[in-house]
Image (cartoon, rainbow over all chains, first blue to last red; front, side, top):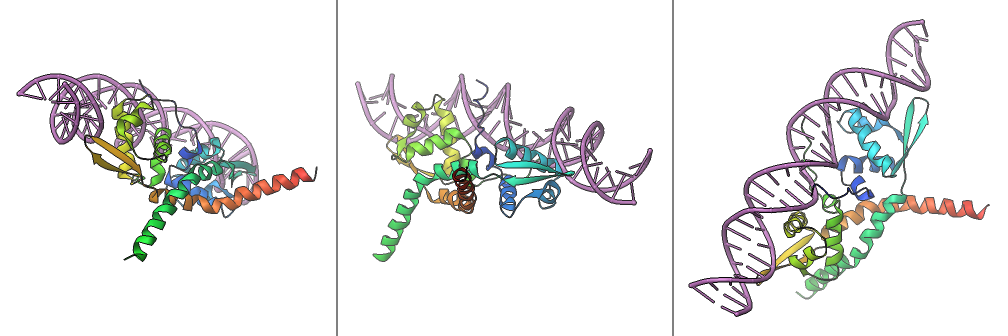
Length: 106
Length: 106
DNA sequence: ATAATACGTAACCAAGTGGATACGTATTAT
DNA sequence: ATAATACGTATCCACTTGGTTACGTATTAT
């Protein structure tokens, strides 16, 4: 069999470090493509492709503004990540708790 | 240029849906490989490869137990995901707040 | 001792990914 | 009108990924 059907979830969007950095930047407010590209020592088309992925997975939105395109953070899909990670919280809290009591009993 | 240096973060570990499912399963307790493989309509070696990725990124640990290898969830690295997503929480809460007041004012 | 079980790994392959350069188009500046 | 700017897209390429089958090895069962 060639390959299973692709993962089109938000997890793919945040799998790439450049895309995560773009999202981090957009937390400070919308930005045009050139400003984003300037920060990442990659060609502008490369950033455009990353933005396309983020757009298609609905993590950002695009708004034409003159000849610029302002990209804006769309946090709704990211909530899925938080929701997925949530039940694991108990586990690392338990681990830290064990470590704490271990240290306290030495 | 061929490719940038690879992302070896936990985000890569959770990028694949099969690997996320494995982690979800391991939340209920450690499991041997065969049990994991039985659940995913993939060959056992495929699951072994996924487990290797999870192992190398320290999201699971392996423990030999007779001829079985028990895989166990190691939540510490997953905390990085929760930490990364945390500042975005404000954004989707703001969005939901806006939606709420929008609906209330109609 | 021999067979069966539970794995990991090697080799291979199709498809996906992330990058670059080249080019086209809409908008603004001159 | 012409040039410059700010993009998106097409094409190409090396590398990665995720799957398979074939095989080797340690452990347990007979």
